[in-house]
Image (cartoon, rainbow, N blue to C red; front, side, top):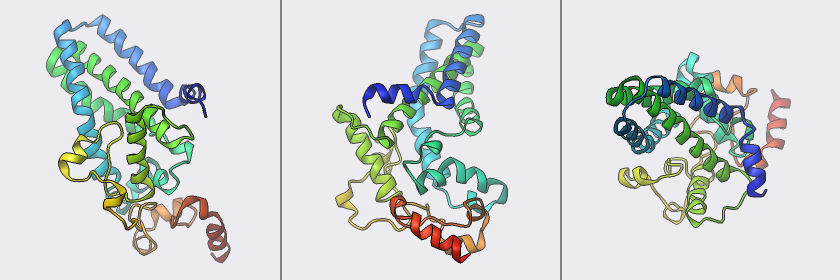
Length: 244
């Protein structure tokens, strides 16, 4: 895949189109209720600084939680927003977050901060910044999961860390474009530091034993719990279905 191919694929995703459309709406709101230049700049700056911490917290304590799949009405949400992504990290249909979960989160994190700084205009500026920051995150996330080899050493390093999170040990390297909070909170790692591969890297702790007690994600997954590398899983799944 070339960089051009990546850009073309990226801008075809409905989620990205949605983020950009709402950014335009936010700009229109700012034009109608403008904040001062200082308020606008401060609103945007706070969001840019705050975003990596919010993502880290959500990724570590929500997406990698062991409580969402225990609640029947949250099980399908957890399955869609992260379990499916870890079951098969190269499954493009679940590479981007679902808009009904991402948009409320972005708005709740950004708009109140902007409103406190610059009223409606500040909220619009903060929301637009959050949406565009999400687009940047998603583009880097695409690079990390698609068959594209980045030329930038910085982005290549980001991809290396993220691939370790998906294929070696999921309990670390929670960042996407920044690993500052991983370093600060002790979850940053190099693969040689963790020689043993995590047995739950593809199922996030939702094992067959756990599914016996909390079956909702398993039922939504066709009666299958992910085990092993996704490329080697097909034949095993077929056998399990036949046995069922």
